[in-house]
Image 1 (spheres, one colour):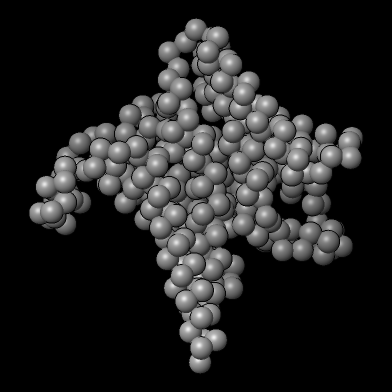
Image 2: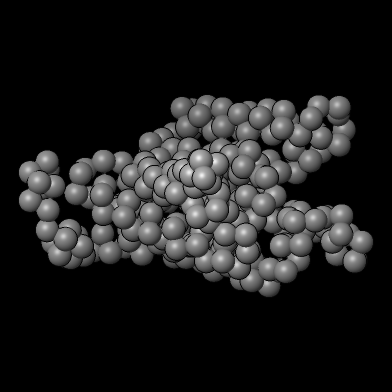
Amino acid sequence: MSSSFISFDPFSFLIDPLSHDFMRRALMISSCVGAVCGLLSCYMTLKGWALMGDAVSHAVMPGVVVAYALGLPFSLGAFVFGVGSVALIGYVKQKSRVKEDTVIGLVFTGFFALGLVLVSKIKSNIDLMHILFGSPLGISDSDVKQTLLICLIVVAVLITFRRDFMLYCFDPTHARSIGINTGVLHYLLLSILSLAAVAGLQTVGIILVVAMLITPGATAYLLTDRFDRMTILAVISSVISSLLGVYISYWSDIETGGSIVLVQTTLFLLAFLFAPRYGILKINNSSNN
């Protein structure tokens, strides 16, 4: 493989993988999930819900195992456990003096541990590595349909409640003062977060899906102060990362989910260093002048 990089041919790099059906399917599903997660990541970034995204992504694991064991769609079980974890976090927070970040850590580690135990005890053909790290190159037609349906639902909800979500993330107090039911928005946003985490299972798995839900929004946040531009930049960077990550994993024979997330992280580091207004090199140059 190293010799193929030495004699790099951009045309072959882009076109040759498209001769395989599994690659065309992987590129399509990865770009769709990337676009949805990139769009949602803007709200996660503004709301400061990085840890909440981590909690939901890990909490869906026992749901996946239970759904497979019962012969149900994995997305159904994952969604139920994802929403259940959110409800449990809210309940424990209200009924105890423990702070929210501590409750989140307790719930998501407990659910994740439950999933590991279920995988070891329930007899099934579940591949733990597939759940943890995803497998877009081996995704089935039924999983493609489920994932595309989830993506459409998430996008439809985000578009329908776009202005309400934006105001809720920026200033929930003002949103309540003008009559917006922020409680409904809170759980609706967490519900589509659970759905997005389920969709991300197919591309990067449970462990890395939080990166797809946070990194694109964080990258775009460094590049612009306008929310509309932020969403566009987040979606573009996420789709590019997904496509490039799949190509790199194909040619270098590495884990696809890890490849996608590393590309996203690289884009964030470039924005962190060279963003026109907020890059650290820009700041250093300004201070020197």
